[in-house]
Length: 302
Image 1 (cartoon, rainbow, N blue to C red):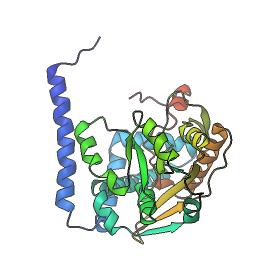
Image 2 (cartoon, rainbow, N blue to C red; image 1 turned 60 degrees about the vertical axis):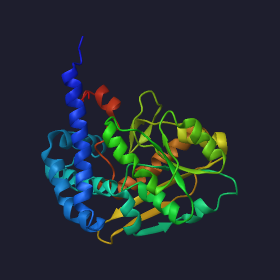
Image 3 (cartoon, rainbow, N blue to C red; image 1 turned 30 degrees about the vertical axis):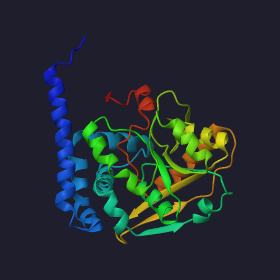
């Protein structure tokens, strides 16, 4: 039996506050700089951190080995550093999301799929931790379509507060995962638009193919679409640092059918995005944790 002492609680609270203070300090000190200048200058640092931090390097390589077996050590190093660079760009953008809205360039394609649904019909945008998914909501907002999001609260209460001050800038409502599901249902039934990230593992969910490997995939987005008649629209935002913009694509809606069939099509679409620009996906996620553990490949149980 383990016990949590008052000292342990104090240390946890102190470390959480330090992370929060660091986030605000970074935001304050870098505020005068443009977001694109900041991301382009800091991206190499992100690659260096990803390669030098053992936990990050191990987790990315573990996932890459699972999906792309046969890469050489040199190719893996290039991959890890490229992914770390994109990840740091994301963190920078999130720390100043309200400013990004005023600075960002967005190139939109497929907007007819979002605009063209029947009057009064809601839309569920399904996406992944790829590029910067908030740019999808920004693009919808620029089109006059306010887009909410299902949000999973951070364990760090202070960092969660920091983030909650920024996320509404890209669109509302911002609904908590779990407790916000009833509000989500009502919002979509009223013809509202919401975005759901569907590429994370969820224990107990059915196994569907993802990047050619079985992965636990939540069916909630498809079930919500079948229940409300809302359009299920895959949407993606790819970061283009060279041209200082996001390329946002609203794809053709997924046809209503059995939820597992619908989510398999969503997984296939996301897999296609990742294959086009693998470094833009968040490879730190433990997407295949259950599969890897069953094969004895994952020693990380955190």
